[in-house]
Each structure stands twice: as C-alpha cells, then as structure tokens.
Length: 323
Image (cartoon, rainbow, N blue to C red):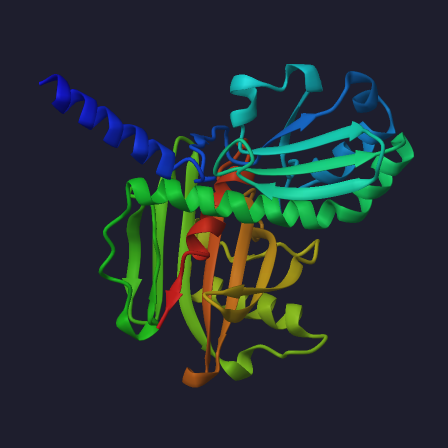
C-alpha cells in the first residue's frame, strides 16, 4: 500500500508541474449596481481639477432623460484603501501621479466581468489632459460592458416569447417580468409594471421612403413616431402620444445585430396632459426587405429615477437578432 501512495503522489506532483506554465488565473465575480463607477484617486486630487474633470465627464447628464441624471453613479476612494473586496467592483477609474503619462483600458484586471481605466501622469495638469482626451473612449468601453452585464442578468430569468409576428423577423431576450400588452400583425407591444408606472417596448416596420437620410432625418423620425403614437398608442381623454415638442431629441448612428441603425433618444409626452417620459428608438435599415424595422423602449414612471430603467430597455433592444 505504501508503494501505491508513493506512486499516486508522484503522479499528482507531475500533473501540477505540467500546469505550472498556465497563465490563467481564477477571477472572482465582480459586483456593483448597473452604471456604478468607482474612482480610485487621492482625496486631494479628487477635490482639485482632476476630480472636477472626472465629475464633469462621467457624471454628465444622461442624454434623453426628462430630468438630469448622471451617466454613472460615482464613489471615490483613496488608493491605499483599494484592495481586497474593493477591487471586485465592475467599473473603475484609477488615476495617480507617476513618472510618466499613460492610459490603459483593461478588461477583467481583478474580477470578471470588469473594465478599469488606469491613468497616470507626472502632474495634475497631465491627468486632466489625458482624462479629457480619452473620456469618450472610456465611457464607450464602460457602457458596452454594462450592456453585456444587463443582458447577462436578463438571461437568468427570461420571458418565453413566441408571439412576435413572424413577418418582423426579429427575436429579443426579455426579462420574465414583462408581459404582452398588444400583439397585432403590424404592431407589437410588451410592458412591465413598476411600483409607479411601466416600462415598455414597441416594434413595427415602415417603408424605406419613410426616413429621409439627410439633414431632415430627425424630423422624419419624429413624424414617424407621432403617426404611430396617434394610431397605435391608446391614451385616455383623447390625448395624443407624441414626441415632446419643446426639445429636439438626440440622434446617433448605431448598429443592431450588425445592421445600420439610427438611434434616437428623447422625451415623449401626452399632448395637453401632465404625462411624459424618456424613450430610446432604433430605426434599423433592412434594404433586403425594403423596410426599416423600428424598435423603441419608453418609460412612464412619475417621480422615479429613469436612467437604469431606460438602460434595461436599451439592453433588451440591443439583444435583437434579425433574420
């Protein structure tokens, strides 16, 4: 028996030796609320111009919301406290004075999934310059990561959805808390009840000629939304579900499932009533079928923060697979 144990021990040692060159390391699961950002920076830098540029860029108002809500909810901590449990937060910026000017955006440095921006400079002015010049790139990396995280959470408990009309040719991954509000051949509406209000997704299609791809694009999209709102969105007391008239929505070029899309963020309202909220609209180019596929998410939640509600809707719409 002693010989047997010696042989087995030798095999285990050899196996361990074979894996000694494996560079893969176990990463803990990250944590944190959606759109929460840790800022690792000294208290003095946080109070001065470096903190000001970080707050200016990363706590800027989120586009398309009726009230100002920051892009990220931020928490600052000094570098000496950034260890152990604190390193598990999913998004972070680490900014320090060092002997050279550098920036690196890294995936999963301490946990998974995680995105961290490491910034060093020889002076405060250098840190401000690097953060200012790279903030858009950092924000894009953070938002892309958060969309994936929101979609991962959706997969834990998905709505079984077999009833999107086949002619739309689209599938979505939707949390199980949603329900079908309206299902017609040319219009589809799903909704989730909140403690005060609802979040909603609508799907329809329009001919290619509907949207002018020029300086009038945003006007074409607004006119399209308002026509559908008047025709398909029932509102009490003969109200009209339209694009809020006082401010022009934000228009971006985007993509859904590899297809070109116009992304519009703005505010909807019910004309002559005290009802309004944010929307995100994707007009997806489908030349093969001579159409635009339109998907929109909108929220009605009076007196409630809406950033993360809209972010959930955005993550659902970006999960679309178009046949």
